[in-house]
Amino acid sequence: MNGRTALARRLNRRVFYGWFMVFVAGFSIFASGPGQSHTFSAFNALIAADLGITNTELAFAYSLATIGAAFLLPLFGRQVERFGSRRSLLVVSTALGFACFFFGAAANFLWLVIGFGLLRFLGQGSMMLGAANLVAQWFSLKRGFAMGLMALGFAASMAIHPTLARVLIELFGWREAWFGLGLMTWVMMLPVLFFLAQDKPEDLGLSPDGVEAPKKADGEKPLLGGVTLAEALRHPSFYIVATGLFTISGLVTTLHFHQFNILASQGLNANWATLGFWFTAITMVAAMPLVGRGFDRFRTRYMFAAALCVQAATLVGVTFVDSVSLLIAYSMAFGLNNAFSMTIFGYIFPRYFGRLHLGRIQGTGQMVAVFGASVGPIPVSYALDFLGDPVITLRLLATFPLIVALVAALFLRTMLQVTGSEHLE
View 1: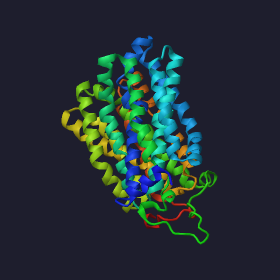
View 2: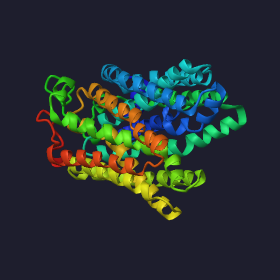
View 3: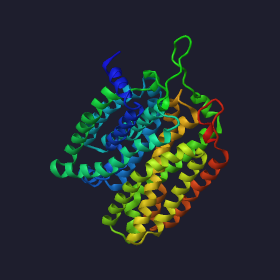
View 4: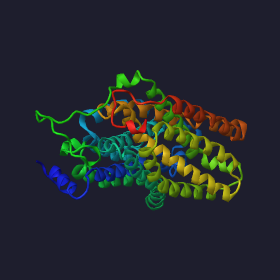
């Protein structure tokens, strides 16, 4: 028995070790900050000015890189399935630090695209996928609540990374700030992953949620349940889930990306838009554990449909924001929207397709979601540039999550080969 396993078993005698994995995963989500949209927002104007490119060209580089990163995620999902979350996240954390250095040295448009792509693939894609896989392996009955706690790392990143970036920029400059973010990624992540992370409860003789794993007569480890990627792709539920995630990811990104522009078109300045993000983050923190409990208690298809309805409500709601009071109300609704989206991200695939081949299935599903994030802002960008008013476009976009919500409520079902969540059907 190695020292890491001995430490895990010692800690498990005090509290189920899966809760330590929730901490590791949440910390990983926080450390993905250098690859998230809210961190880039602090650098965009400076990068454009330094490289002599327009904001449109910068946005094109970002979108192109995100699309490229999306199509690499199934490959990473296979690696997680083969090597486990711990080793995969160790490699990703190391590479993310180097990607920060590379991005900070960007000297031209092509370099910028590659840098964006590395940060999006490693941070927003791979780090989040590996973290969600880790929690999914350790929890079943309490998976929703655990995922909600994990997602607190994203709320912390949304609150801290933009401010941290601005401080580093003011002290050292934007290029040096990326060097600092890379070093911080290594300092935060590598010791935590090396000493604490354990891929599956079965490795410690446990089962998800802290139940002692049943012993087989021949002494072998019990088999995990689940379907293959090929089997999942032949079932309608995969396409309902993927379409829902594409819709949520694309429209959440749209509201993040365009919040300043949308509110400016309705008479609110940048200071109020910034305040809105704070109310969103606070509401998200408060709502995530409650949303997670809801997924553990109520039928999943109805919770999934509810998330899509909240998404539609925020798209319509933002079009009415023309005062501070309405801004606060919208921001709180958007915080609830973010709580749903972050919990669903890690919860939905193990729930419907099991744990056995989760890495491949998650990788393919997240590819669809990240692709949605890359194209989601385009309709509103077009409305702002050519129509001068995004209101009609936003309200029309709200019909898509409503349609998907209806389909999910009526037709989303667990595959027969997947057991353990019958109480949620």
